Length: 236
Image (cartoon, rainbow, N blue to C red; front, top):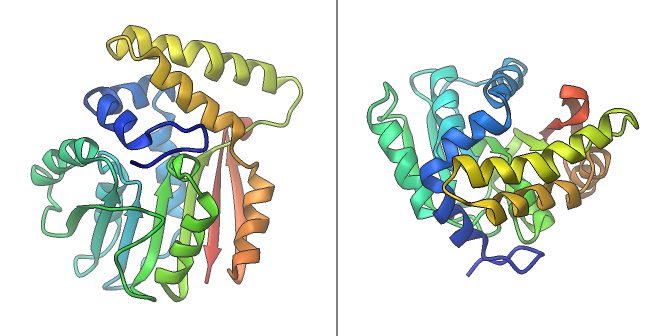
């Protein structure tokens, strides 16, 4: 059983919300999560024949986008610990134009089943904060990257503008769990938990410093929606 720092069985939680996950993502982010990914990938470089892994791939949205963006000889592996999320993702992959470029597997982002220096690109979108030990996960990402490889982390963040922050806290702390209750078959507590992980996760500067401490050569940071999300580009 994979426990979060709040002693929550995260695997069971994501298995439970999997059927409504895509719909809720669109509702909660007002559709901006797709735009964020597009902006992130516009700044990434994709070598020919790249080996790419998307961690916490969930229902495979980013894996599919990476397959579309990379050249035809590249391959995308999507890894997630929730079998129900992967089942939803596999259906999307099977009907896509990239079924031969994408492999979805169940696994633990803190103990990746791959050799050192296996991948050119590692991505993780809105999943790092749900790892019981995010630092251990970051070390694993560093390990499986090739020298010169790219790590891209897209994650919710905390606005530091004193005018914006109260509205952000109200939306994520009050409105989002209610959306879970209304639109996701009564799953108020599950979406309340996801809000709490956002509030308690390390801020974007702390994450950047942690990446440098682990050994990444360079780290660049961009923020979206007045700080509601941040992307970290790191090179090994």
